[in-house]
Length: 485
Length: 95
Image (cartoon, rainbow over all chains, first blue to last red; front, side, top):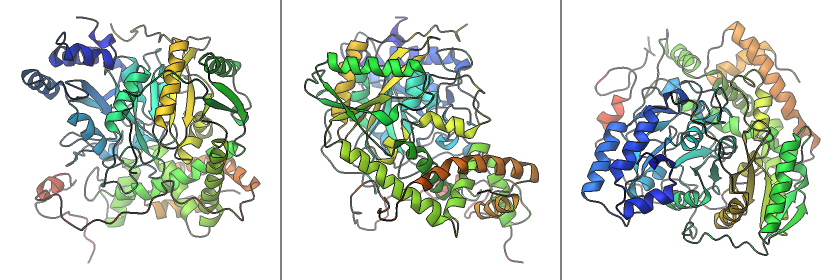
């Protein structure tokens, strides 16, 4: 069966359960395609040999009651995997082998999935193009020399390029939704506290969330159902009634009220994005839901707020990389010199830049002017959403202000790179769930995404809206396999 | 506001990242353009706004203080960048 890798997760599970395919067939097919796809540079580490062993073991004693029976899956290299190198895309963790497993990946293996390998990402998830990785750029399967987005760029590239049936990424300011939008796939950033952060290399702890990336909404719902769990090992994990998201998925969204925030119509936004948004509004209406104009007045302050809060938390989280207990160590004349050289040689330019911003805004004399100010504006941004949700059930926006750009196009201008996340960042600041679904193409044939933002813990609702819209949009990703010789 | 080279040197000391002259100048340029962008927040009056310190409105749970992972010293030491058997080794601190 040469078309195994073209099947969705749902189809693969069906075929494995019906014994039309074995886990070995499926695992082999994705390994073969991954081997042929080295030019995408989607993997940092592969675990193909032991994946095949695990698949064989599964086939000898299959358990079809599991949610991901014998399904191979590669994951972002930000999740700690026991006894398998975990780098976070950084030189400083190039030799780090965790002694424990992240809760989210453990949930996945417990449901029968098999690790294929660890996927490339921006260094410590800091980036919007996967160009800050120590392990090099990731190519987009959409076109040569196009960025897949970031920071979960390897994850997006691997799903769109069919190197893995589904995957998980992490999203601090848009790192799941933006690359999903750039590569024509579905990506969900869950409510803060829905998925455990235990064992995920920390970037900005009040914003980080793990989430699923998939070819369609149903696959995305199923994977979310697997990874979302209450975890005592994460003090910000929240106990609430978690749905069987895939079972309860429905395209009936009649009577739902969807907000259209006028502040997301930003200066300089290409007409193609505005047109896509209008098309999205029409789809919503075609599904029998109602759209309502709303206002989120503090939207334009979200990105400046984010660029205080996230680097501040990062500067604190990344203080642990000192060359003593694990990771890279540079030679130094004394202890302090060793610390300083280790961090200077071990971290890349973007990570150093953010640590410097964070250190500055937290330093004596500047804390109130920057950090405290940002926390107050963050409150105003959250209040905007609380106010809007008195009138609407969800909010529809574009996912990004443009389609994917070329490798190297924005690397010299950090602020223009940061602007990529203008529509996704407010969602993290308010701790809300957001999903990006592919909704069309621009004039170059590159995918464009729409974002649906929900109330806290209301993932089912935004998945349903996405599911209903997906049916109307009928998006076809244009993957030419350009990288396969 | 402008971040000068002296400030860059000071922050790099606090952050324990050694920065040479050339890199310091580049960083000053980058940080100034980023802070120009951040200054936009000053348009907002926030005197009477409570800062948002935690997005998850839950109280921290208590648990008993028990050792969960046992006998992993060897595994943990193995990740240490300098070869040693029982300790983490650092450059000499006391003369």
